[in-house]
Length: 383
Image (tube, rainbow, N blue to C red; front, side, top):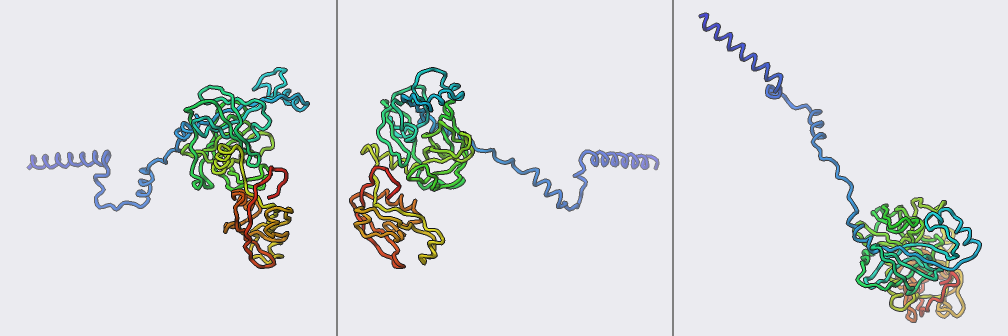
């Protein structure tokens, strides 16, 4: 009997020891029939979540576009007092040295648009230049000739004597939206080729008083002096704009930059390459925007259209019978939203061909067949 009791006691002792070990090191094995607690499930789910995806790199876009962006150096003979003040500026001396040569030096950027050496830049970059030199991304420096310029869009086309050059790819004109990431490439302050990143802040900016034809892309990608004429690209490395101007109180970037859309730049480039100049349509009217007060006085349902404030004598509009007080609401069935829209719609019309101008006169809508003329050289803000 003692042996049986001793065996039982030893067995119980061993079992209690096993249970103690399991409770200490493997407590989950002893939770029979327990229901999971909701809080524990939530915590477990959070801890097993995948980490957030890191931000994308834009290195492929940069590698694709940067070889096609060049630095442009211009020089002109200038001995004016204003030039001397410029020469005395410490920032200028820091980047260009201190010499007594009365040659006025400036710099900007440009974009190679063909492997034959055609380069797009801003008109204001080369407008006063006596000599132009282009520095390529591979280190070569070549003289450049002006093929043609278009001051009204602030664009110019240059040519360098080289073949088989890297060139930019134009983006599709309808694939840019507010909020898209864009990259600006240029030569800010002469420090060398630089790329900055931002987003498209707005589209269709106008009434800025920069150019006659304004349809700017606004971006917060840093654009500084020296970036003018450089490339604004998308994340695929394709050209969406030509960097043109900034809003600044101190000469540096304040997060508001403007670029000429690539679609407009391409149209201007193709005309200059083919004809050496840009030809635009013209009708000879002076227009102003429709304000809510004007819309109410004319009995219009909305403040849309362009009020014809004046008609130039012997102009296409004069011959077609347009009068001051008419409201232009459409051109070839395309809506005129304001005077800027009117200007852009007329500009793309082919001279010596007819177009239908839809107007409101005394509350009646009238279609006026008009023979489009050729826009004269810019001397006044009339169209």
